[in-house]
Length: 503
Image 1 (cartoon, helix red, strand yellow):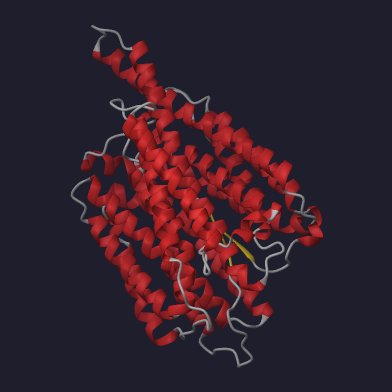
Image 2 (cartoon, rainbow, N blue to C red):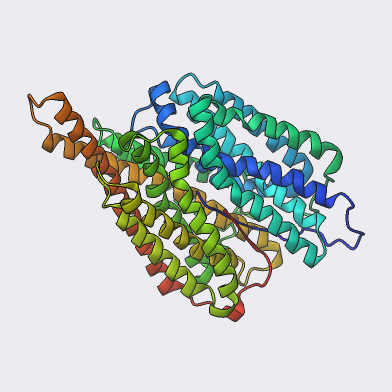
């Protein structure tokens, strides 16, 4: 999915001469970030093959994505603090080593649980790797013009990773094995680590170096419990009124409330509440969460529609998904030019409306409908909407933020997208599976011939996908309302530097 990151402020000013190896260091850091971005999309195309080989149920399959995004988003703020205090280079290398090891475990997975565990570990180490790399770039590039160029290069490479991941996932799944979608991270990590040791300088922040470990544990467990409850609600033997599903969902909600209490009274909060309580930033984070949740209806279910219903090969499925990335690149460039002239709010509303419209358009898909007429237009418009939404969001995350809170504000925006995607995958999967089950129960008749029964089952699956698209579109409509009501920032208030859109 789309990832937005903003560069954190350097923890210490630098008056020294620029590091002579800074551009080489940029290349190394961008390679590692490419690995993290690739992993968010490369497994999408491989999901049907993974599910078949490991015996993963329809209700459980979303954990391939959410195990990664939950730990990544839940631990991202802590990862940024660890990088600042423990040492950015040290954290960068440790994150790359752990990411490679977790990828090896995933590539060797023997069942669904082992794959989910590996994906969770990937997310945890990615939460170390990503903020450490961004912080290193901020320290390495002290000249404003050079820094802008460095982050433009970084953003372009990392942003292209989403499209590369779709194609690479298709190639590896079709011509090698889905396991290589995870194992491919190992050589990338080895190259990044080997180059980082001699060429990337160490840096760390001074002063208070205490971590909010309780906050990180509570928020991550709360999110996992909430998603697990939603997963249980999708299983036919449980449902929404299942005591087990309700217990996990209520428990998750309670843990999230406890997290807020911890942040309120902690001397070193993981997420200072003052960052959230600003009207514009709070609206931006809420919109980011809703957008991330809604988009899972497109990325997750289109993969199964392409391969399971239309019969596409993995490569064809990857190519079929590229128009979304093309739309993002086009609208991101246009939005960057229009942002200083129009401000954030009009662009974000337009983006949310476009994305919602595209999702509602995708509800018209069927078993026999054409990709050209029923998917391609929606995919292009969805990409356009994403670009118009996420570019202004990057700037809003830093509106009125004191320098010492800039890193936390930037990481929070990234975390909301990851967490929103996780919750969206679980919620929309529940709606889709329940709709599929109900449709099949209503239309499958005893004694029906196998060919007709197979067609009805395909129609039931598509009905579930369309239901997910409808709910995803609804979440994007709510995002547009949130933007309209809460965000009041003027274009003159937007920071001219600081935000970098990735993907």
